[in-house]
Length: 299
Ligand code: DHB
Image 1 (tube, rainbow, N blue to C red):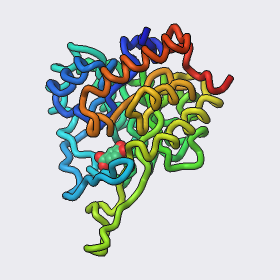
Image 2: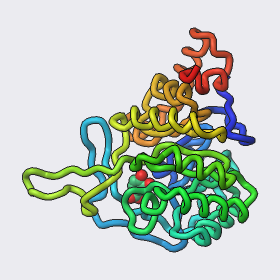
Image 3: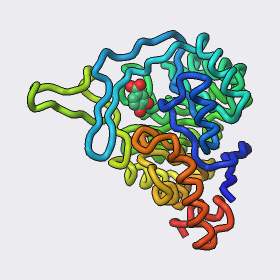
Image 4: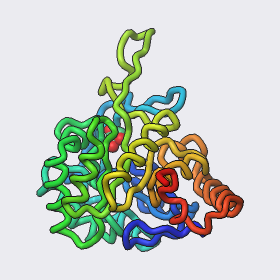
């Protein structure tokens, strides 16, 4: 009943682990696949090892988390070992970040070689100069990156968009026009927290990305708007922590969803809980499949 598909990719369960959560090692990704997630998106991986920003990089607040890790990762060569452990066990989506079409393409080729079921282009990190949302808010740049990656690999190419723009529909259209296989919406919302006692920002990067329940209605709105302009699959993400949140994204037009912060607040059981409660809702309300729920809020 919970089977869904993102284009040609079939998922036994509609919820995936969002990038940045329990996805730095092969064994942690396997653990998530066994906890009711239909797929796991890896931590965003770049060309070279990157230590990320100095501490503090993370803080909790009412309604969510703010983080500015600075894209820490071991680099694509070392990450191959983790991919090879994880990809044998299920759908692993390789999240990658770069600063040019060439860099994204080279990373995608390696992810494909390591067994990734798809790549997710991080064009939306709010915390890194020259990367993520700095390049991901220009539709022509987004289009040129997607089309370069599409010509370099044969696995599906997903693009994760930022909500930090008034042009998310244009970005989604640029993805579709460039041949992109799916849009992932949304990444974190650029935000900040100041400590009154210290009289300065808490994060070393000053700004960070807000995630969790506080951003859910922004994400649902973004997915709804994107659905009005593109036909390619949409994967909804942002503030999902229970079946009602997931149902909102599906009804706005997403065919699958991702969960990040709620793995922190609710534990890895969040996937099993949402799966069984969503199934209960579908039975009670006469939805015989996930696809029957997708986009119903537009009708
Ligand atoms: C970071 C990356 C992201 O894509 C995001 O949404 C938040 C933080 C980071 O590594 O800083």
